[in-house]
Amino acid sequence: MELIEMLLSTKKVTVLKKVKAILEEEQDRLTEADYKIIDSRREKHLTGESKSFTWEEAKKIIQKL
Image 1 (cartoon, rainbow, N blue to C red):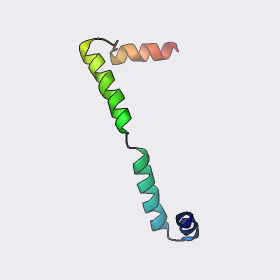
Image 2: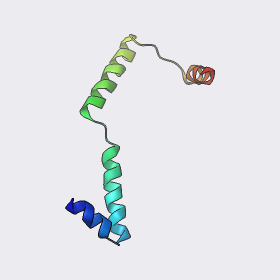
Image 3: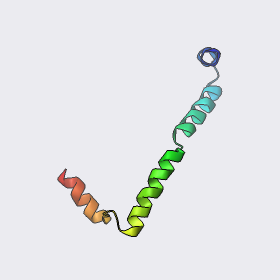
Image 4: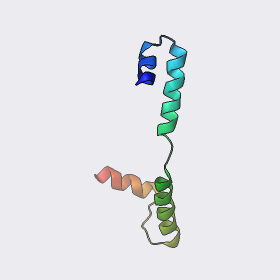
């Protein structure tokens, strides 16, 4: 709560911009679970266990939706 009060009371734009940048950077990071899902899907792609599409095929499928 103290941090929230400090943020609300500051008038320094530079401080708020720095805090915002830090929070946005934190949100953009993938978790370990995310990486495991990506690795699993990549492995399935490389072994031919999953279906893949060219960019042109993908665009046609999306346009049909």
